[in-house]
Length: 460
Ligand code: TYD
Ligand code: MG
Image (cartoon, rainbow, N blue to C red; front, side):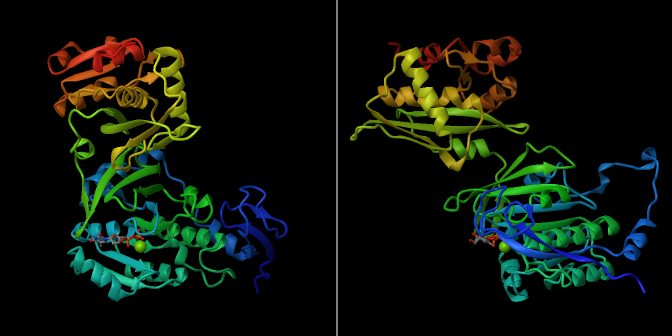
């Protein structure tokens, strides 16, 4: 008879995964209240460990092939790009995002295309087969190669996958999964971790891709332990404002591709539609000849994306002027206002200032400094920035413009979208090919005053 497995009680924080020796109201690591739960751990018996150890077999690295034929196309080009060129066989991909953002929708939607290549098993712990059918009808997913299973017992699911051998599995969601032999409730740290481990083992054994849906907590992290992100091969986040129809898919970890790529989608009546030209969407419908609007260019992975930054400057009705931002960092705005006051002579002391980025985009690249500064000056002086102009450049505390990376790609994108003028840091001029200058007028500015002079023309 194998020796009896030992068990021990630990207290685990459900927000960060930190283990404590005893229960307390607040987690010592992340500071969250009421997140510590009691869990019982069973150590594997010596007999079980021995079985696991016998399966070792090393092979020469040179014998292993790594060609791209192992990738499946999902039918959504934007998703394929974020995954690094398609879905890799044997990979476990975690898809996180706010409730209602479209996680279940995108995964059901790709089934139609993937079912043309392999059989898909969709496991739902949240919805009934009837609900899934309704959604599939709406998304026009009818393939007989798609099978659904509404179940939450992860061990039974793993058995089922081994028996049925589908080509791909979708698990919606990992927080509803539960291993019967672990005495804690679904969604707890241990359950989520063990369920992910079990599914990951199946994925590697059968060499099939598995998609896991993960819920996010109020801070925007995937609910459950951070260790979950370490177990899986890729972590994708679905972002977007709930009231806007645009959704951005971002890879925060990817063992098979770059983590900088983003995919842009729009939620429609028939599921998510790809937006192949996000710049067009973000700068379309700009008002012409109105002050306080300036177009910026940021790099999202290998793609330049154009975005409209709007600034409104109005006299304050209170003692302290308001500084509000949406899409750019509030501290960065305060710094830019100080630079404009000290180095360029524009005063905002008795003015409320509002900065807004259209389309719910978040711009965290310093190259957007110049567009924010121009939107502010344009708003203050009520003089418009020409609508055919694009600007980018980081502003230093001396008011100088600092060079930015990937300048050529940004200018090319501006020229492609029909912009006639581009104001950029003077230092960047050196690296630009001469041929570009025939497509677009390129103006190098030494400091923020030069840039204002070139576009707004109001130099104090
Ligand atoms: P869903 O995929 O259920 O979100 P998650 O799984 O991330 O919680 O998202 C559903 C939302 O999308 C819901 O608010 C309805 C909307 N929706 C559409 O607008 N069009 C559609 O075709 C579908 C299927 C959903
Ligand atoms: Mg869902």
